[in-house]
Every structure is written in C-alpha cells, then in structure tokens.
Image (tube, rainbow, N blue to C red):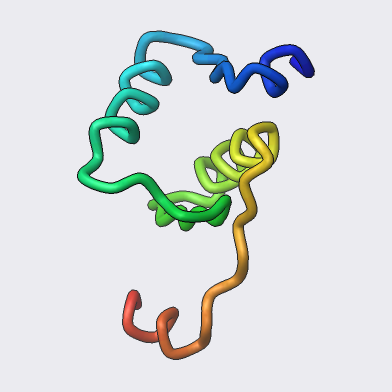
Length: 72
C-alpha cells in the first residue's frame, strides 16, 4: 500500500466503499486537513471506520465536551 500512498491512490474494498469515496469527492468543498469525525449507531462501525481512516493517514481527534452534549 505504500505505492498507493505515494501516488494518492485510494483503495476501495468494494462497490459500496467506492461509492462512499466518490461522495466525498463531489462535496462542495474538500476538507482542509486530515481530521475526520465519525458519528455511528454502533461501536463496531466506529472501530471499522477509525481503522480505515488510520490506513489513509487521517486523524480522529476527540470531541470537546460541549459538542458531545449537543450531539446527545
């Protein structure tokens, strides 16, 4: 996967993964940095997404307590 990283290639594991990647690229504005936020309905999904983000050198910083309270 180091060659993928070197040339900016994103590895889509299946058609659903590819569709998700495409959605990100048609967004009105691309993110300015490598931070991502995931909101899920299950812990397992969060773990899978966090592992996937780490494979693409994305960081998943913690949330401020007031934002957690608002989301709840």
